[in-house]
Length: 479
Ligand code: 6PG
Image 1 (cartoon, helix red, strand yellow):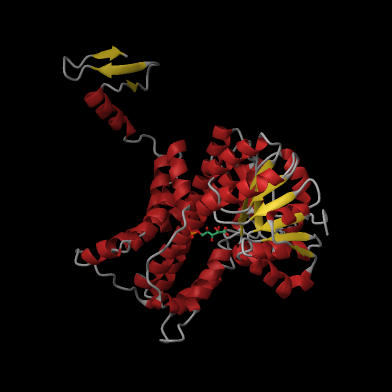
Image 2 (image 1 turned 120 degrees about the vertical axis):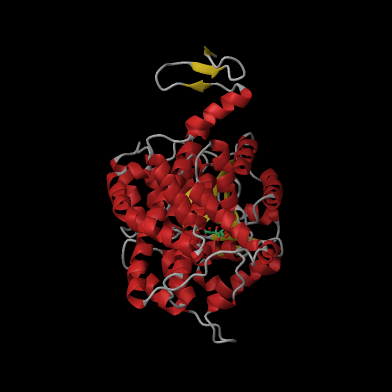
């Protein structure tokens, strides 16, 4: 079976295993490799009937099983394990071969690895893969970076195994050189965090302010899922909320500890945004909300802090409030996508990636965790105007947010009065209001900086930098 496999997958934990099966189900011969060979053989035993697999035990056998140029996909943990696997295989490869890293690698690691391997003529294709276990098996959204040459070889295979958007187009695009794919995936995850936080806030408000039960809120989410909020995350939220714990008979959501965990991609999105100077305040609040939830001791020590006790509304008011929450959720969602796309655009400029934002929104329409009907509209906005400075400058989104804003503000008034935290809704509204403001207090900040540190400022009416002699006669000098 030498040189017969079109693709090889090493690292056969659940994502690797399901991707390998997906390739095989689509007619490709797939070489398999895993650190412990038992997993490789188990895969063939359980799913060998699904397609052509070549089970291998050593790195050498694995590499020899691949046709040339070799396409070798690594599905191991990000960080050191990925470096270790690359170091193991790279010496066995030849110029023109491709290593596809399908893990959630940091894009800076991908840039470094791509550079190192380029010297050897090997293409490192840092590839974001979204959709969880199910997506890996039945069609994920795929975000490859790397050279154009590698995409020419890999693209058709990735298109075949990817999810298809509602219009039938494959959810994969060549994002750009070196780290572009992993950067796009990172921001996808940042947006995923924001979406989840906003949905969480909507749930909490419907529960504490409107007084609905988890089962009733599940029904509200189901209704929302038939409208403009139609998305995978809204759909699964309804499922989670209607689930009842078998052991206690209580709503499942009430028996789960309220401490959200994270593996790091949302945090990276915020860290990089800080470096790039992009205000991703909604995404940042989502990351911080997870951190805050995890501080059990701090929360326990703060239980006695004074605040209003939320008093649920009456039945008719509750229904009207739920409609307002839908508006607030939708408007805040527009803002978090605006921030995420701004970050991709800034990353693209910084690293010369030339990322097509319309293409990115198009491949997020299917397969990935943030898939949503809404993304089709984002794609239309970027297709109509590829240089759109911000999603909020698209006329349709601007009109929708204008129509939502009264309710959005009312929801935040209710949240504030009743003491229900809504940091995502609130950060999104603050961003919106800051963007539309005529004047920001940044002018005062500049004055303060000039006062204590002679940092200078610019004037509204003249070119140049200026400094006021604060400690002297307060006259102005050109700096
Ligand atoms: C996806 C997911 C996937 C993973 C996240 C979860 O797109 O399929 O984003 O990559 O579920 O990494 O991240 P946290 O564990 O940080 O919530």
